[in-house]
Amino acid sequence: MNFEGFIRDIVENKWNVFGVEVYEQGKLSHAWGDTDTNLHEIYSATKGVLSCAVGIAWDEGRFDLTRSILYYLPEEKVLKLTSDQRAVFEKITIQRLLTMSVADFPFRAEGDSYIDFALQNGPQDPENCGFHYTNISAYLVGVALANALGRDVGSFIEERLFRPLGIDNFAYERCPEGYFYGASGLKLTVHELSRFGLLLYNRGVYDGQRIMSEEYVKTATSPQTMNREGGYGYFIWKYRDGFSINGKWGQKCYILPKEGIIVASLSHREEGWDDVLVSMEKNILGINE
View 1 (cartoon, rainbow, N blue to C red):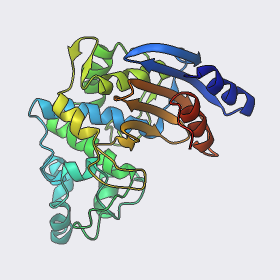
View 2: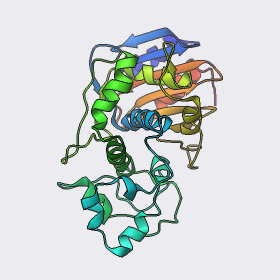
View 3: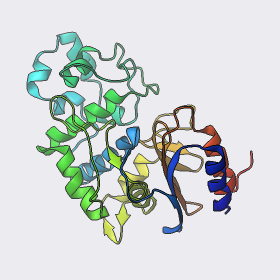
View 4: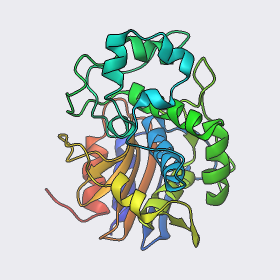
C-alpha cells in the first residue's frame, strides 16, 4: 500500500479532500488531514446511516419492509389521496424505496410539506422497477420509520447508533414538518463515518456489541437493484467486490471485506471524484486500469 503516494496526489493536485482514514483488517492503519475535529456535510451518505436505523427496527420486528408505504404514513396524509393515487402507492413497498426502484419521483421534495409533495408527485407506473435515484425515496423511508417506531428517528439514531458507536459530535437536519431528513443533511467527521464502515465490515458488530443482524447487513450491502455502478442495496452502493456509502462531492466510505480494507474520506469536489478514485485505487488498492 502506497498511502503516501495517495496523499501526495491529493496535495499536489489540490483536490480539496478534508481527511482520509484507511483501515486494514478492522484496525486504523493510516490517517491524514482533518479526520476527527471538524464536522463536514456528508450529503447522501446520510442514507447509509438511515439504512442502519432501518436494520435495527427490522431486526426487532418493528418495521415490515414488504408493507406499502401507505401503511406507515400519517393517516391524514393518506386520506387526502385520490383513489387513483392510493392505488399507485399501495404498490410501493418500503423495500422498493430502500432500493431506489420507484420511477418518476422528482429528485427532491419542496414546499412546506415534503410528504404532500411526494404524494402529489408520485410515480405514474408503480410496476416500473428500474433504478431511479431520488432523495424522496429516502425521505419517505425516514417518515415511515418514525411512524413505525412511534418516535423521532433522529433521537432513535442517537440512542441506537451514535451512542454505541461512540459518536458524540454530529448535526442533522429536519424537514419543515419536523421529521429527520434521512436523504441528506447529516454532518460527521471522517473518523465517525469510518465507524459506520467498520459496523458494516464486521457484519453488524461494533466493538464486540451486535447492533444489527448479519442477515440485514448482508441484504443491505448486496445488489438489489442493478445500475451502471454495478448495483444498489438498501441505500448502499455496490463497489467492486465490496460496497460503499456515498455522498455527492466526495463523501466516501469504501468497504472491501475480502481485501480487509476500509477507506473513508470527506471532501468538497464539485468538479468530480474520478481522479481521486483512480489515485485511491492505484495507491491504496493496488489497482492499475
